[in-house]
Image (tube, rainbow, N blue to C red; front, side, top):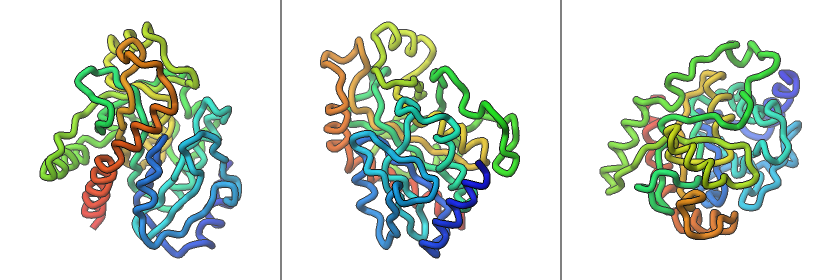
Length: 271
């Protein structure tokens, strides 16, 4: 694994002279943010040595790199059949490329009925209900320690700065707990009731492995969920991936604004 990571890092370094400090992972239907990135080197996943290949509609499968940002336009999911080791690969590559902050985005189902489809929610914590821990297996000591602390995965200090900053732009950014299921089937109404009892505000099929990999690697995490539908038993509509993509498109201006503000905050922290 470590040799493959180093091969991929060298491949990317040969394609660009940029040394960004911020990584971004774009979720379903959120690829429009990638189109706002200027002066980017663009690499298709299929052309990157050792890199996994995304297969989900709404994920373009390309890496964009400029002086500040390394952006994954499309992610990999456990339900696609990837192992957790394979899912860890891009995050570990980011670590060895010098990424200090990782901004994770996703499309999520709303459990908290105070949320509305199209709203962006700042993730304050997560519940891993995927049936496995992504760090199971031989530890890579060059990446991080065997038993990482997850007390503050989604940095509270950075979250507070983000909320204050976007409020100046007229957005009252809500916070919530994201619960990850393995997918690909949507949750049942009974599972959503369980999620609510356990303290979840949002449900989805991604992000938690990436957040754990990043925390293991010493990368600070910032997470955003775009609420694309209310979850099963709350929504009156039949759940579908088409609805997810359509709602994500409608909420794109809001989340692009929030991401741009977040990037400004992080860059100021790095100065």
